[in-house]
Length: 198
Image (cartoon, rainbow, N blue to C red; front, top):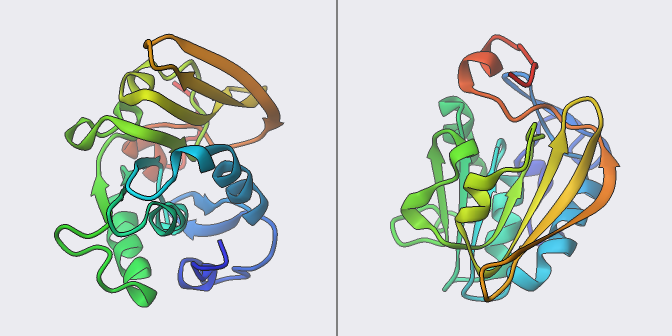
């Protein structure tokens, strides 16, 4: 995380260990939560691997993933707010101007992250930055064998869940910790600041 300056991704209190607003009813997660995610995904963020960041927002965690997978890897960020995707590209380019170019290590796209990003699947790992109301089977399907998904799941009571897809295709799940995230929703609800799960 030290290799990617959080100040490039957040205008207000970027180094404070708490979520900060980045607009459109969205926050950049607290640094300790990004640290947890990277730690739990480290085995699947090795040089040359491919990662997906759902709800990529500012682009910060996508850039951290790109740092870890290196020049031969790929970090894909997907967000349903077009303006956030455009800003995230500018954020990444502040310190890493080559990363978002064609054939660069970062791909930032606008889309419904609840459906993943099949165009570049399968992924060694997937991180989700908002709470899924149920087990995200569409994302699990886009994992490599082996692969790992780190995702908050639940509505009023939420937990970080790890879904590990084994080499034989079976999936193991493990509850890690209780959390409170905004819901994984659609763009119209996000723009209207309707934070319901349905």
